[in-house]
Image (cartoon, rainbow, N blue to C red; front, side):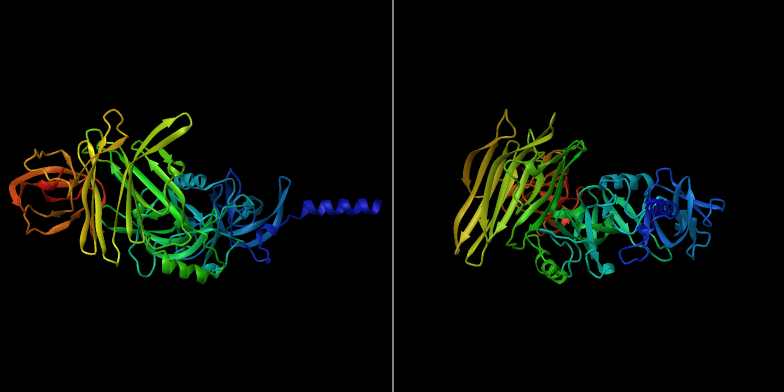
Length: 542
């Protein structure tokens, strides 16, 4: 019995005397490339493995450091641990062309990002510091809580952890579409790889709503059972110039067509951003995933047999309050493209949600009012159906078009449909806004042909108008001037100058210079920004 007690006592003494250094190595007994500082008081870096040597720098809590060597152990305040040789941050180098080193007490290092339990915590820390040194995007917090798993060329396209997924984000960049524009869904992380003599990567932050140009795919990740690409990206400024920012995660951005913002006419903006994924696409083969991405996901309108699911849909009001639209009744159709409309020309404008769905050659548009308000339960929203219309374009003799526009009290829809050379529909329907319940509309009347043009109505500088048909915007007030683009019906414009009288195709009115109130797409698909100006003929405005 004495021998057993003696052995136990000796073992316990050894445990105190010698630290467990396994945390510095992976399962193959290879030294980890880097670790994080795990002490809120900061961690001093010394020139040699001794507290009596020169202090070179002080690291902050959660800082990532590259490690080069595990040295001798030392017991400090009853804690035994090794000294660890690390690479100093470049700003602490005396010679900018050569990597320099320092020593830290290893018991204050941890393999996983400490303390932070979610991405917002990390974003707040990055914004406070300006940047955070990192080996890549965070994949785990604490010791066991894994939130993201990555694969990339650096990992030989092998997962860093076991992973499964049941949905895939659409690939926004591919060889056939190299000018894809995306928008950040929220404040998000950007990773910059080590460059030049600097061995450290860094994390910075891009603000919500930032436009970026996607330039390549470098890796893939999985979050919440959804596979997403990781892109290199450049920020796009208002003047069209760009600046390379680094790598962004596909889960943090969305196609520009899935982001819309509208002016409230008072200097504020209301925004809608949503992200959808393709359901039930699984596979362990990275080549299979690449094939699927390349062939199917370069076009948001491409047919997807398994269907879509909504990942997120957020509305932001002019005051910056956010509303989750995933719990709306009726539910948002994940197959549809949607955008906000705010018809400032109406006497009592209300926010509208436009939903467009294409399938089997049929294009369907639904319009809803979107009401929103704060409550004791949080921010709430409600949708009310206004109307819907559809038309068909197919290879079997069906051709058509449809659109909607606004008057001071109405929503007007127009549908033209031709079948085998015969016109089967050519009508405008008016939906009247209720006087005392502005979020409700009812069908009022229908007439043959397009919405009526108005001649000699009072066109004034400063009023809001919209085209009642497709309308060319020109650089000067004459038909021979250069075309800037063709405006879609319902595009909100502001008159900034009234020109001379003119007559075009029997319609008499004035040329007016207008300014785009919101970012819009021209009929040909080109996107142009709010503030763009040009001349249009006033007879085709309401």
